[in-house]
Length: 258
Image 1 (tube, rainbow, N blue to C red):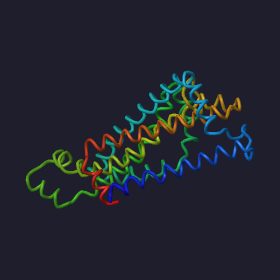
Image 2 (image 1 turned 180 degrees about the vertical axis):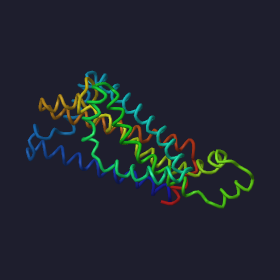
Image 3 (image 1 turned 180 degrees about the horizontal axis):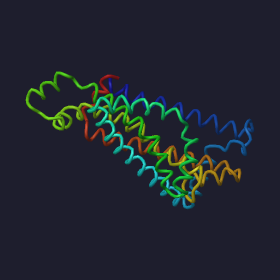
Image 4 (image 1 turned 60 degrees about the horizontal axis):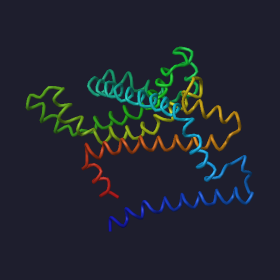
């Protein structure tokens, strides 16, 4: 029964998405929407195949920026979450600043990064870090705070130090929350790199998208958007695969809850 429900959960969205694509294709082919305003899915597919050699270098640049920013965000989030969990004063001082930082639009800060750091990869990496950092650190903090106090007290009664308590109790218990934040941040990483590229640079999918958009080549614009979506989903499922390998019990538990 559970297997049938799992198959149904996968088939329903796939069929619905296919229906939307068919409606989109027919609406353009029948003239309800001009083709120069909205290319059809088949047009976008053919264009994507044609431009793949042209966007290869842009693709590698965007991936390098996204991965560099994503891994830096993980490292910074781990360090800050540990400090905030261990030292109450740090948590009370830094947490409001983290919340306020999320109210400032990244698109407003990105031009400043270009002025400060130039037109290279660094400002794009900074944008990715800012977009990925918050969900990781907040999720990890929630996980560390939810650890059973009785277990921590038991470890203290056994003369365990703070490092041992964190390594043996807190961090393993917070892994589920940590990977939840990682999955969210993973989808932001590619988008963050593209947003950074919109504001200046020499290469990247964001730069290519601006060029073809200004040339009114909407089929190429949609093709690049499709590439960005596929890359974001690939990073998301890569993180999910790592979670499945490191914590197979959490995947099974989530399936049972469904």
